[in-house]
Length: 247
Ligand SMILES: Nc1ncnc2c1ncn2[C@@H]1O[C@H](COP(=O)(O)OP(=O)(O)OP(=O)(O)O)[C@@H](O)[C@H]1O
Image (cartoon, rainbow, N blue to C red; front, side):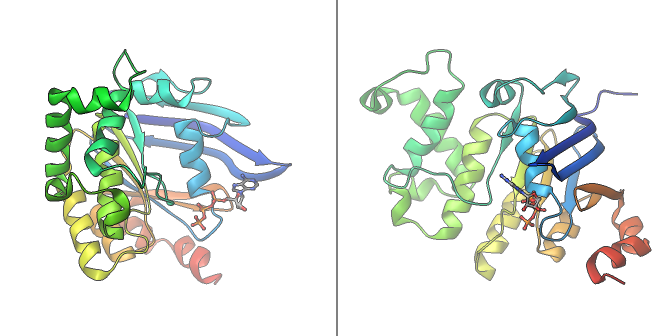
């Protein structure tokens, strides 16, 4: 069997004795588009926090292309090829879009400590940042500050920052949350254009978009995996109705 992009085994997290993620096992193949589904409080964001190292697990293993991540700080996980976006945007509002991307690019450089003015002189890095902004259709706004842009632009900028980290596995936490219909279409189109060699795990409550995008789906409830399968398998499984309708 070929190596898995993400292999999670027996992963658990308790908060004060209460299980938020409970003995989760998941196998995600390279290039897969995988949706994490589940009602509020199911443990989806906690699972992302465990994968990217924002939280330590109580138990379990997380392997990225065979490399164990548990015990590694978040920046080392980034260096292994992991990137994520957050439900709550985490941008520098008073800096330009270009500088936001340059800062992300700089995080991968061996020489990380630099003054802002050095960024302005770094034409190579600026060109690289510009090319990433072009990928997310934000090149026109490169020299505006984040605070001067619309919410939908900021969501795409967050994806640009994640792309700047050259991820092999990208975790997207509700990339469409709070967007207008037109903005949703733009982000959806962007997701569709992401290269197949980036494995994507998505949390998204917009079912039409999420189901159209994902090849495989994991349904979580009370921190545990209820079922993992194709769209058709999830839709046909009576447990999906039970989780969502309490039937
Ligand atoms: N830092 C924390 N401290 C204590 N409890 C937490 C913490 N983070 C999450 N929880 C609890 O863990 C459980 C899972 O929460 P989580 O945010 O992972 O769910 P979710 O599926 O992402 O929900 P939503 O769709 O509403 O974002 C919830 O009961 C939540 O209250």
